[in-house]
Length: 103
Picture 1 (cartoon, helix red, strand yellow):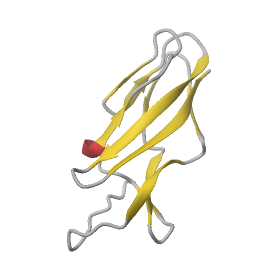
Picture 2 (tube, one colour; picture 1 turned 180 degrees about the vertical axis):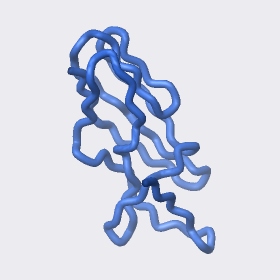
Picture 3 (tube, helix red, strand yellow; picture 1 turned 90 degrees about the vertical axis):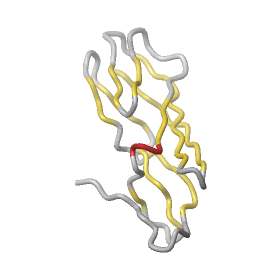
Picture 4 (tube, helix red, strand yellow; picture 1 turned 60 degrees about the vertical axis):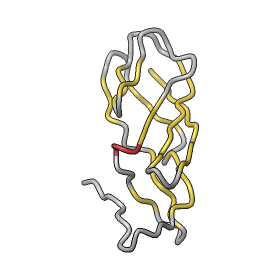
């Protein structure tokens, strides 16, 4: 189940972006929909961001591993890399750099 945060009055209480679990683990030669990044709200709760406001990149990814939109395609090579995620809704911009582990 997915939950989207929609402010009622246009005001926002988003405080940041976090990777739940700290490491995103993906099996070699598989695909994975990214759902582990969450918005940190002012009250301490976590909310799923609207995927349309998220962008992802990979830094020094294992050979054959790519990210397109919100999906990681893991290659056949194991390894770790950084996965910077950015949330930008036109009013707020937050970035969180997590670790992607392909095994």
